[in-house]
Image (cartoon, rainbow, N blue to C red; front, side):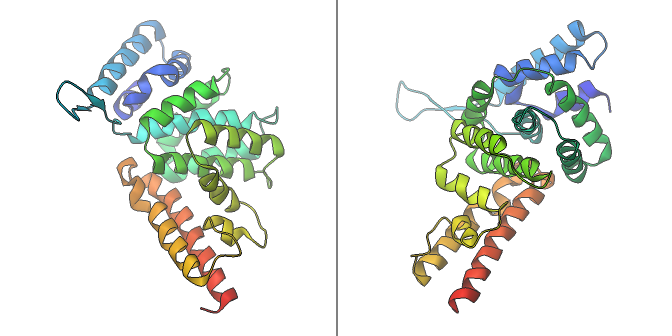
Length: 262
């Protein structure tokens, strides 16, 4: 599969805005005749992304814009761009973090597609990323469950070298705010990457003062929020990451069941 066809067939709304500009620069250094091929590719993608944006009328004379469908490729390039931001947060790129990105992409997409993605990633990493603008585009276009999946992956990158540094935590926290992720959701996903006595409570977004009934209610709520079916529209490859979050919620609940004896 040619690089142009891989990109062109996978992306929708991410061809536009700041993400589209970043992708365009990255593609330009990978495709021969970038001025002609790259410009044509981005032009087609922008039209394609617009055609997937629907408008519904809430009352006569008005139109309400609905969120366009996020394709696997939209999620993929969003992930690559934000991953490059996190990896550079502490001023250096650890090989373990780069290996984690490659490993995750091989796991999700297979070796051939992962190699294509990693080529793009290396050229994205050379750019000065306008983090806030990128996140605002993702926030507007991507559903909440998919944004939570992005955050989970970013913590995985930070933890790839054994620990999440303060600089990486600060960067991920800032990204989560720009993405419109609540502090409770941020704390829940962060707790999945740390070991502490109250992590199970944080994952379920409750405190140690919660009653047994509140623990059960919180579990049902979080199991629904992190259920793999929430990202089924992104393809089976992205459900693997969602399954990991779902297992963390189950493990947290089972731990509290044992501790509390219910």
